[in-house]
Image (cartoon, rainbow, N blue to C red; front, side, top):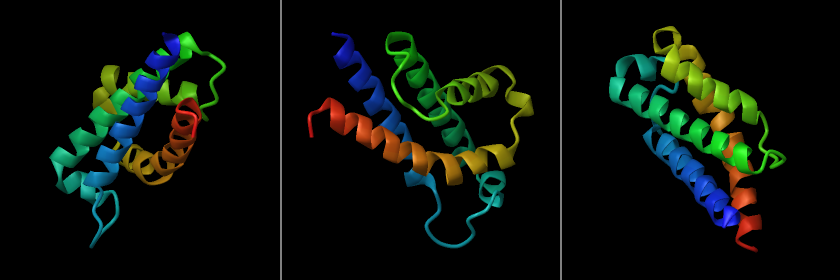
Length: 118
């Protein structure tokens, strides 16, 4: 039963990552200016980071040894966005989207494949 819950949370993380990547501009400027000029993208990014952080937290509560790089930092970032929202910088959000989300996608893709026996 726990196995199914962890897989569901891994899939939730992957869906949130896919949403973030779907919102990323494919043409034109790819800088923090994108967040400053598009509040819907910024809020979607924040929300999906919250979802990722909550799912990672749930996974860690059930399987604390599951290998997700920077898992604690992911959860801490989620908490910061929720509880200290006024202090969240556009630069930090942009760095997460550009640097950390692509790496997390590959890690989560591997974990999902392992769980599904592929």
